[in-house]
Length: 186
Image (cartoon, rainbow, N blue to C red; front, side, top):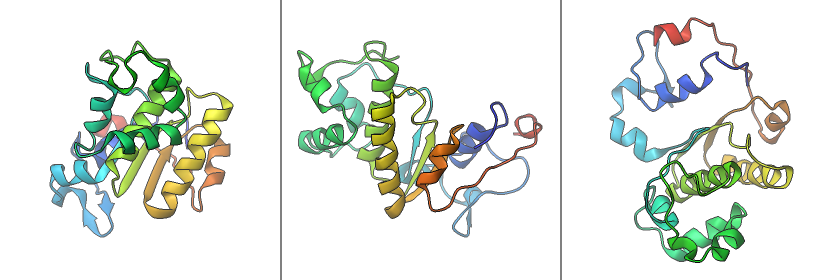
């Protein structure tokens, strides 16, 4: 948790090694991320950004991007978890509906849940959620928070949020105060 513009999202980009640290270190377990190959990091971490990107392919293929071996049945089960199954089933082409790259043929809340579904399909060791409930109504927000809570019992979950209530779902939560100069030193 923390105010806007302090570099919380930048920390995720540093963890994923989109940027290299100029100073200091980030450890995963006892390993410095500088010593972990980028492909290993990207394989074992699912990043759920605030503004997800989708490919101009079917809904199914957008999910398969995270896990090429995932079956229709597994994807449909994930869609049930994130409360998208009925909506996607109602589309004329269902799970084979082609998405626009910006996801413009879906609402912000639907895109957010599709992005979370893609992360769940990946089944990584670590989840990085950046404001995962910001575009959701109360019912879907509560459902997604329950899913994230369940994930946190089995995997490492790091979440950025402005919502202090959200921190109540975790056994451990921290407010990170970041010096404004962080973005200048990355």
